[in-house]
Length: 635
Ligand code: CA
Image (tube, rainbow, N blue to C red; front, side, top):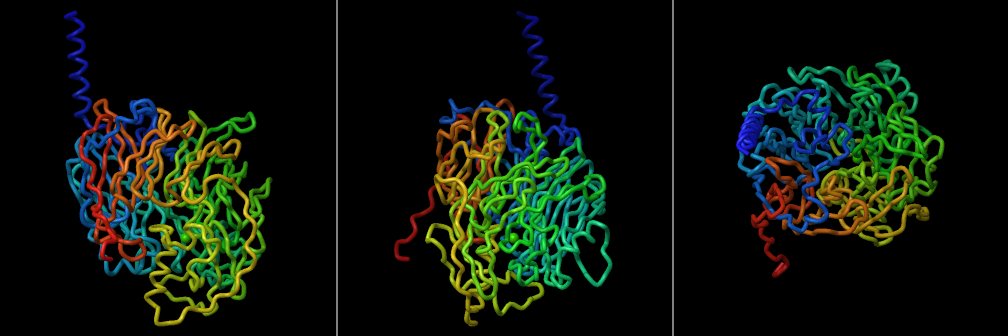
């Protein structure tokens, strides 16, 4: 007995000491991120962005005991929440919409440090195309990497929050912003730029994690046609554009997902829409406009091009292909395939071979009308002629620019083989080219007319400018109302609405459990949508979903049975959920609430609910935020 006790005491002492010596966040830790589920070191939990946690202390049997453990007031400069917090060595790190970074004790929520990049709000806000937002941070070797919305990339000391270096990725004067989470790969910080609704040239670049020096840069669209192509990859792209088109921007920005396959040493990202939106303003009919609306693979070490797959050749509908890129090994028709998967803004779920870029399969996961389907061999869309629009004929198409799936994270559970996609189905959008379009340098240049804000079939969500990115529509409508003294341009009559394809079942905001091998939904429930909140899935057979209206819902991963619903009372501007384990307890964290200041221009409607970070645990007893005061009386 005595001997056993001694061993136990020693083991506890060793455990305490191990907890005191901070674990190094080096290459091996990043590569193994998510394998134990205890920490959450990288955006998406792992390099394959699965958001699958092997934790199972919280499971389908005990989920009803989930309660609040602690909350943290995100404070001034915190509006629309899109970031997923990171957890390392018992500390949680996250970032507000104005790029203010905070570190709190992951056990208690007690603030450790806070750092404000002091962005010039008044000067920068008019340069932000699609919502004042930030989707996350990176960690590596004692540093926190912060994408500041004004185009700076900053490394902070992980212990003190003091800046170590600052690098300039891009300038807001050139209409670029940074809104995506960086990806740290073998000592480099990889990040792309936002802003394709302004005239910009999209790119992704890598910076030395120690010094901030640029290591490589990859442009996604051509630049100046009066100069020779910069390389073979750009030469190939130039052949697919009208020579004057990129004077108007080009687009192809990289603003959400970056995933990484360490074995292949390939880094993957998606590219945004072409700009301006209408193909006729770029003379793009019959031209692919490479490499917009594409998934691209580069050699991570050098930035050298490996392959691309273009989802929407010659894009005319703002179908950014930047959504989350999940890497997994799945069995398809009896073969184990190394795949990359995307539930794209355009409404199709794509499965590609991630080594070669070859199309494996694709199918609509929501109602889709812009295309009749995808070519089975190549994955190229078979576009409905009635989905094209111009100065003389409008088109009512689904999905619209907010997308079937936007930034709200999906998750892949290898135990069920299902991808849980927060999506929006059955919403139409009316597109018509602005007959009076003139390029306005340094401003929003969508090139479409907003004269009729609610066309289509009267189903929810058409042209509703859903908050945040794609907040293009919200921003455009804000600008249109500011310019209200000028009468709206006449809009062309619509063509007949093209027929839809895609699954029946619940429409509007949904959560769909998609089988990527069969390209079919296994279950679908109402609630949520393409932006706002998102999902995480766990080995406890759970899908944890945050909805844009403040609800936290939990479903069984295999069958989609609703196991729990909590109204967090944050009500709006919700961020994605995440989970971690500390001192033997599994926690679930989310952020939400916008605050009176809101995110302002283009970011949706401000609300008085204080933005908060909430962390839940089994048998948590802390009180939830108070419900907002009833509105509407006397208003
Ligand atoms: Ca866009």
